[in-house]
Length: 405
Ligand code: SF4
Image (tube, rainbow, N blue to C red; front, side, top):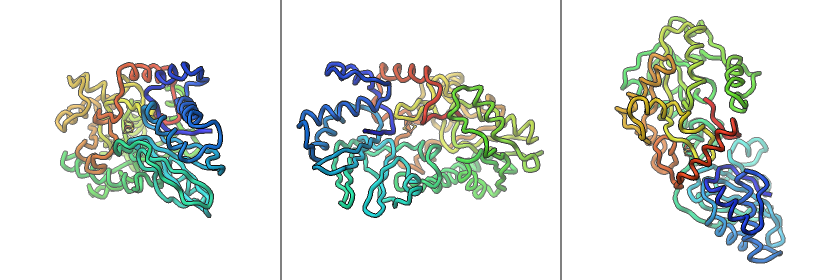
């Protein structure tokens, strides 16, 4: 048994490698080759009676072949005792935490999972490390392969729940910091608004801080229908759009004849936000709509486990090509301002302001993965892998870690 969170960029290569060992994969799940490679390495050492030491060696061998971002967890009998193993990729791109309750252990991607069953958060699995847990014993940490530290910034911006702790920081506080930084940039850009309205729920902490920094009132101008389904797990664009219509409704009394600053966490395709701008204008009767995004433009696709569409679908990429910035993996502030005008036109908004790359670095520092914003991929992805992942995405319209905004 093995579970994981992440994505391998060399699945096809591993599939062929395993075939040579007469192992035919039965799925397209990239955990399957990890499981088989690990088992093959374990069996090379001995056929039965495995130890923690064997598992460390087998993991080190497995890490030589698997490329990408992954947090893995598995349970097996080692040294004759039931043992839970949790391991993180050499850059620690995908999250993994562990907790304890009465001498028992649990690991998960998000700390809120521990909270839900009353386990106490004890720490994170560090980049490239594996931790072995046994009831009533102290956890054993072993270094498998470490190349750096690059936790995904998008977990902070969009994915993780606000009550989670990631990379030893509260997600809620991080989102407030993003809002504070963006608020200062909005003032410097002289964006003039009457009211700050978040797109519920992710952007609420950032919008609260923008409101405080700009000295403008915060308003829940868009109300989420708590009975509607989650749009991101819906299979088609039309079903997502229909669900969105039922999902959000403006409070006209809060937005009528006002210059609204609509705050959202990110823009990927731009389809959802475009509808929201129209909703605020038509039903909310806002006089102006300015959009503020608490991350930089998403110019590059993610190959590390967040399914955020193919590059051609990314609105920032499409518009950057249109205004003559094709091939740019990251924009300077002047280029970003040009892009903002083009995206605003597309959304039907009066202006768009993204958080700058400089502001993002101020919040997250340099030890992070921000490849979707700056094109700096920690684990190199070659052309063949890019094409394979692209084809997979085009054939699957949704997945667990997908973003459809
Ligand atoms: S590319 Fe973006 S979404 Fe993917 S792991 Fe890096 S920061 Fe996260």
